Length: 475
Image 1 (cartoon, rainbow, N blue to C red):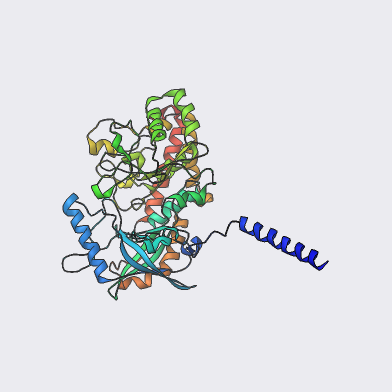
Image 2 (cartoon, helix red, strand yellow):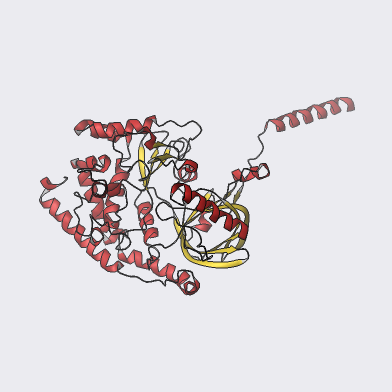
């Protein structure tokens, strides 16, 4: 009997062990801290990048070498540094991060020959491994559920500090995909000496993680393109005449396509984007409308266009063929436009000269300014997506309804009081420390109330005009 019981026990143990071997091990979580902790606007946050003097000077040398070769500082070379985060909850350190500058036309050298520091935009990579085998695990590391973090200086010397934040928050509030943002103090400690750069805007990068936070698993595996005016002209979605306008950026040879693939790089396939561009340029009338309904997130685009008119940022798709991401949903096959880079607008920054003035106040909601025409010299330079959408009556009515909803005080969307409350919140958190910043610009409301008042009055008058004279809609 004892032998039988022993046999049963051994058999049971073997079954148990074999079943355990079939279980998949728990997936290792390489994330440090939550997304919500960073993007909490109600608390003061401070970031410190600690970098050795040798690493800092080497980054400067690499940027100078790149400038000597290509005439710009836009190298993607990462220096090695440590990252320290502090808020009311506490402080933590992340070692061995990648640290570099970022930006298009705004990128500058990090320091002058005399060692004086320049106000720069920066990028942090939490998953950069510096091509070292011992750093292999860093490829899976995220912090705040981010692989990277973008940090932008207040390069327009804009007193409210929140123009871009308010703009992207408005897109998000109105069901247009856009990056989450927050403000923070930025310190860079170089060789043990701390330098307070000031209050920076932090951005959630638009990447695979961005898509995963917003779309289901079967929807977030499509092609994502960063689209901006680069070596091949504006990213206006006009017929492609040079196949190199679509590709994967290679900064080592200064190759920068207008449509830069950011996902699925191992087996790149640009067929779907080329087909979409060909179709929106060649189709017209009912054929265009049927195609665009099946292949594009029209409603989101009309919301985006309405917000664009109100913000008055001239450096976007509609006026410049610039500054957006283009994504194809891997389930539905529909494309969508994701806006970014809104540091101009709301009555400050570049006003759109030589086409716009008064920061777009007074410009027709249909006959919008065409900066591509002015800068390229091509009369009638088209932006086929916005041009054709806003010549379809049903879309015109929806576009106008969104403008009306956005400026309705009851909606709490494009509203000065909403802006003012966010301004006060951030001013109370950060204004007192700015006296010691490299750019010690105190918080100030500048002309924001006048801009909101003038823009809303302008749009109200135009909406009434087109309701009275509907045949005048479009262009």
